[in-house]
Length: 162
Image 1 (cartoon, rainbow, N blue to C red):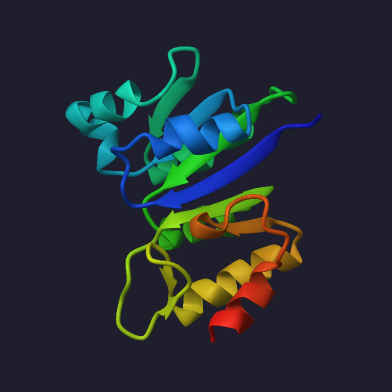
Image 2 (cartoon, rainbow, N blue to C red):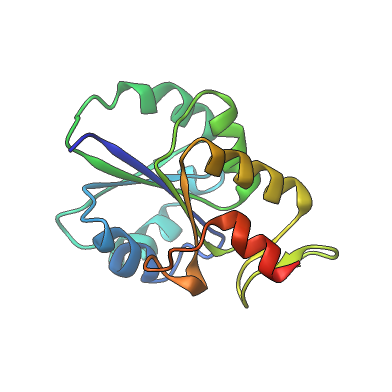
């Protein structure tokens, strides 16, 4: 199996879903949280690490560090979960050439005129267009409320909620 890179978009880092539900669902080996503010916040890092199993590595990268360090991760048998606070931050990294195998949306806050896909996930048209583009590149898109078993394509989910 080749290296998988999975992106999780969740603006609530301090909870067990990252470490307990999603990461172990993929039997991951490395969590990288990409957030410029979190890089220097040792208190929040400690709270996150409480929810992550002891055998799992967790790293904290700024956006710039992620751009330079991710290509250096050469282990072909490693599943890496990248965690982003927003789709905008994820989009910035993908612009720089990062290919993702899957994107999981678990908590994206509602803003006026957004399309609400679940209680916890709302998307602007710009974000919908970005995600549809990723799906065309064969990236699987999951919305947290629908689980990983859901076979619907993201495009079908958007049509259903429009």
